[in-house]
Amino acid sequence: MKSAFISFVIIVCSYGSSFAQGPPTNYDESAIPSYTLPDPLLSPNGKAVTTVKEWERKQRPYILKLFTENVYGKIPGKPAGMHFKITETDTAVLNGRAVRKQVTIYFGEGDAAPSMDLLLYLPKANKPVAVFAGLNFNGNHTIAADKAIKPAKYIKRKDGQLSDSEAIEASRGSTASRWPLEEIISRGYGVATAHYYDLEPDDKDGWKQGIRTTMKDALHIATGAWSAIGAWSWGLSRIQDYLESDAAVDAGRTILIGHSRLGKTALWAGANDQRFSIVISNNSGEGGAALSRRIFGETIRNLNTSFPHWFIARYKSYNDHPEMLPVDQHMLLSLIAPRPLYVASAEEDQWADPKGEFLSAKNAEPVYALYKLQGLTVNEMPAVNTPVGETIRYHIRTGKHDVTLYDWQQYIEFAESKKVVSDK
Ligand code: GCU
Image 1 (cartoon, protein in one colour):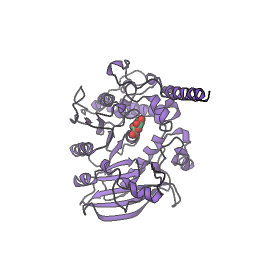
Image 2 (cartoon, protein in one colour):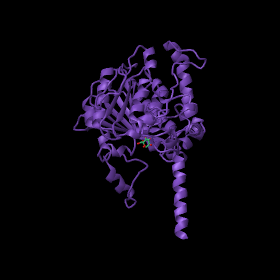
Image 3 (cartoon, protein in one colour):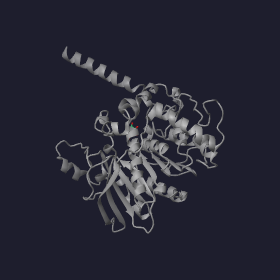
Image 4 (spheres, helix red, strand yellow):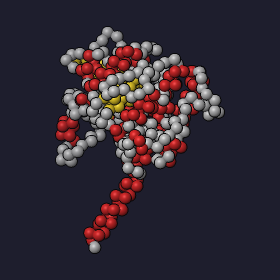
């Protein structure tokens, strides 16, 4: 009897979870239901947008609003009293080739204000340098095995036996392969990064500890009016605020980079904050670069079930109806125009739908064309490890869901080829 009850519970539970996750994941091209993408250049009154002026004055704000209201929520402005404290400067790191700075960005007056720890590496140069800015997954202390790096405030760990300090020491440098500092510095670029948990822990209840609660009054915004992705994006803009205050940085040339959920975040931040001069989406997938109407790999329902905090509540109403969304993700990419955009996929990352990422980039081209800029320049997906495109670049590299040296080398080359001019 007892075992019959247990198996009943197991059946109900597994039915419950598979129901929540919806139909099984589709990985079959021929099984993708047909879909029609909304046209980024079709204005609400049914007329085609044909000029940059119309795009910038009306259509762009309109599309941004659609994403705000249906997908990611609002992003508030800069907080009053924000200030920076440089807590460490080492002028001879990475074999004497770089300067490392650690900066606390306080989101209000006084040192009790909520804050974020920024880690900055700058190559030694006789002029201000362009910086790659992006959030990291596991804490600043994991991007390089350097004991001087201030550990993350929130330590994620698998082994419950470790004390906080043991867990920190064990994880120092553990994500270094995703941040090839030597390569970046030797090519003349800097890196600015912060742990995304400083803004909001990545958990369904993370908002209770994060800035959506602690900054609620200061930013005059209700917690549900924005999302975790919104909070992380807001943090990227605060990094840019700091970069603008640092004379060693050419903040007119900041290159925004993000992987996966933080790639979704980089796209949303880049759409909202046009101070970012180039935007890079690395394996951002569903809710990032990939088309939602293309049912392949992760779906909106999967996102909202596993990560209910990433998007606003309204996005859940599209769980089984991407066709009802007034936008699709190519329209998010089009909000980066005319700035250079890089979308990158990985061959073994089918969950993120590489082809859906490619097609999304392809369908952002008409907006770049308004500026007389060429996008991908090809119609078919390129072979692996073969980047394509002018102002929109795309590659699919061999291997798994990750950020690799290969990816970085392509991003650096892209940044070099774009020679983004500082507006300072
Ligand atoms: C999960 C999630 C993806 C996300 C990824 C990541 O796989 O389903 O949407 O991009 O985590 O952030 O690594």
